[in-house]
Amino acid sequence: MKYDLNHELEQAKDEIEEAQELPEAIRMRLNNTYQILENNPPIQKKRRLKGLLIGGVASVLLIIGSGFISPVMAEALRNIPIIGSIFINGGDEGLKTASRQGMTSDIDQSITHDGITMSISEIMYDGSRISMVLTRTTRDGKNESFGQLGSKASQQGEVNGIQFYADGEELGDFGYSISRVGDGAPNSDIVTLSPEGLPDEFTLEVVIRDISVSEPFTFKIPVKNSSADSVVLKSEELKVHDNIHMGISSLKLTPATMQMIVSITGKPGQDLKEFIKSVPSQYKVDEFINIDYEVINEKGEIAKSLGGRGSGSGSTLKYTYMYEPFPTKPKSITIRPFVYSAEHKIYIPELEFHLPVEE
Image (cartoon, rainbow, N blue to C red; front, side):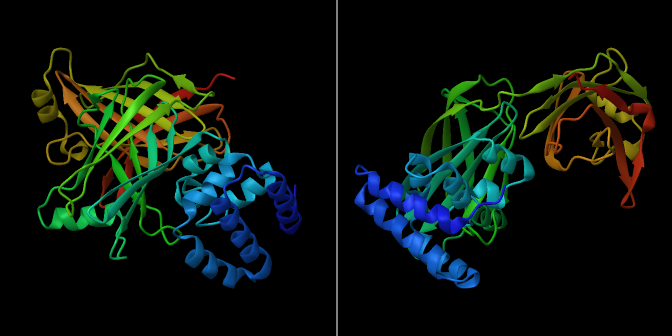
């Protein structure tokens, strides 16, 4: 359905006049925003929005979430770069869907040490992954994002990283990823982690160590599983090829994420070192089993990979992979393993799985 933005602006102004409890500072910020939206052509509007609102995003987001404007106007503002959700403007398709479906939370927590401010503004937890927007602002105006700073730190051999705790317990060595948001918010990153076995509700502690500051930035954030619609697929089947015994422990589908857990073992009783040594070289990189997977729906669409991680314990290798969700709920999923050879994919049909998705 189409809507008239100018009409929505006028309606929102009327609502503001009726909302006596709206703080004056926020009222002024919103009125200034309206003037820009009304009086500037698109190119000038974008330039002026960047200059005016770069320091006032939190205020505008507060307005959007405060209930003082209509839902249509709130959605319009959310989709404008700088004003709106960074997940919508810079996230993967799963995060965009999560934001549009109300699965994200506005946090707006900031901590400043020695002229450097770290802020966490949005967070999403769907039971498979936690994603948050991390913004780094400096007094000198250089405003390198945490991801940019981390690249420099690793080149210099310095420590720069993040630790995570759930209800006081460290989440272990599972790793996390950092992706740049882009031009709309150049000093912001989206940080994603995919720990397993978390409850639906907990307190997440995020400890950030910045090489420019001696004191860590410590955030405590209430987190709740926002996915009411999730499907978990499991297979009892075990595929065997070239001494690789492969199983799909689970494939979890939410509106924001597909999470697949794969287990690989050798012959019964064979330890990992012996097993890996027995596997043909085309499946190994640096003496580690390295098989990738395409996840395909019944229409032949291939899900976009969001990365993965692996670990070994006892006699089992365990891999966790994340993918963007399909546009619509699939009726069936095919998991197609492959390896790379000279930049070409070599598929392994003997290890292919087909999983039906219940209605």
